[in-house]
Length: 364
Ligand code: GDP
Image (cartoon, rainbow, N blue to C red; front, side, top):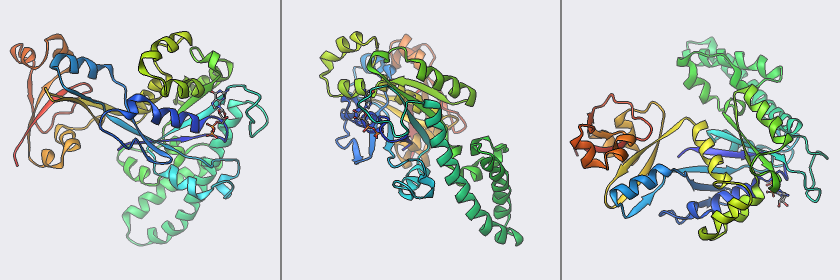
């Protein structure tokens, strides 16, 4: 599955947010008894109102949302790249994630110590970014030595990798993230294989005071401005409120949300933003037994999408009976869509679209 790593300075609310994410009713529901896989790894349901529509139209007995994994990565402190804090352990954890959710303290509470002495989102972000850049720099400098030896021979991949490394090094030395490395589309795979942390997409999670949960505050505004300049994404959330909502009976949630000025839990925005950030889209399978959402990356063709359900579906793929979400819902479901000529038979080359309702035909 796809993984989003939660990073940030100590005491910014990472654990509070992680616990809220993995304790919500939605995360607990739907056939996944072990939402918290390890103490710091949790799977959450991706909230998607479209799935409710499908369940209603098809009278499905069960609703199974698709899921996203969050990893709480502790130990990132000033000096982490030099082995302070948990040091290397956390670095190994971050290398494995597909995207980074960077929690930034935007709440003031004087009872909670700020490791750097004052609330300053821009400075905090820079501290974290600097550690990640130093760690990337360190890892590339080590690799460059080995690659140079290999590249002297006929090792084409080593040459190409070294070329990318030599483009990344000067940027990192200037204090710029590796995601700014200019590269051609056909170099992307090799670039990703470098596992650089500052090349991963970032979502800033502004953890604000309870009273600012709806609109944010001056601190979060500053983070949003920064995100915009970097081409990153930001969301406002109050981890404290979310941790209260997460353990609340569903019946009480609506009233509580209204009282704090929210129309849905802020976590939903965090999850959806993480999903978008990873370039993920959803397709559905719908029947009387269950309506289910599945995750694929944008651009996945029908056989690859079938393979998410089962490798046999991919191997024996014949075609995908396809109904666009809008056709499915406006025409009252599968038979209505079929009667209106909106059920398409798509083959191997079809690029699955977000919201497609699919039925795979395959041979064993
Ligand atoms: P971590 O070190 O980043 O994992 O931070 P924690 O989640 O352990 O939170 C550190 C402290 O800040 C705890 O005492 C939390 O209760 C508190 N905290 C977290 N989020 C908020 C928030 O939104 N508002 C307030 N007032 N306190 C918070």
